Length: 320
Image (cartoon, rainbow, N blue to C red):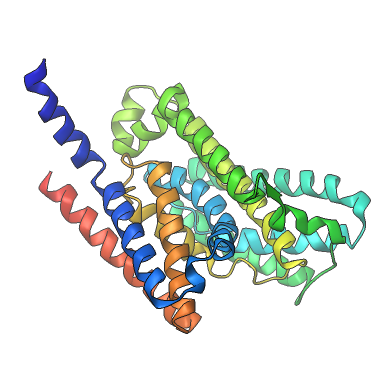
């Protein structure tokens, strides 16, 4: 048994190589950031990074499950724009409307996600095509609703984005709990294991009688629900929703998933790697801000990171 221990350790390290690389990059960025600015090392800046990463973490969590099945959700950006605009537009500054609107937005996000899943099942079309089409539909709807910032939120609503629990941002604490719950679901729940099985070999999963339809509805419904959470959080953070709030979140939500080691072909990866990827991207943007690098270049950097990460993992899969 003891002779097998080094072999098991080596296999675990190879299986989690992507997570280890992201963790190492996080450490390097932290050291680099500490050198370029004294303000980077302040507690307020670290808490600010956690606050800024919450929206990205929420939408990336749903994206992770979609990619684990071998699919992808390209409707997340437009969905966030629509749900965020509706949030502030329907609340219209009234505190009494916060709870019913928030519940309605979460249900609407869930419903849109389920519609994506149903279309994928019925049309037997790749999720990329279905969600890309849904993205155009949702963006058109939100522009019909409003061409600019809509409505308003009551003053206490921003507590969701800026409030703290035990000195930590509420959003950061919520993210850690949510990611932990989803990780436990993927590891121990039967449906969670089915998600990996469908992504690893969809034909084999179908021949084994696994409930692919239920998997797709769960995954894309959850992605829509996460977009609802992100929309509410972003509306709280910016105090208003607008038609282009989610503009950059489609690419941004894929980046942490891929960087965190989840294969675009599905069947391998997990939410822990995604969370580290979210913090890596947020930390990188924070460092670039201290270096006065334009946000346009930050988008270029994210795109290059995706290309690099995909090429590394695709090559690794070929070798295996």
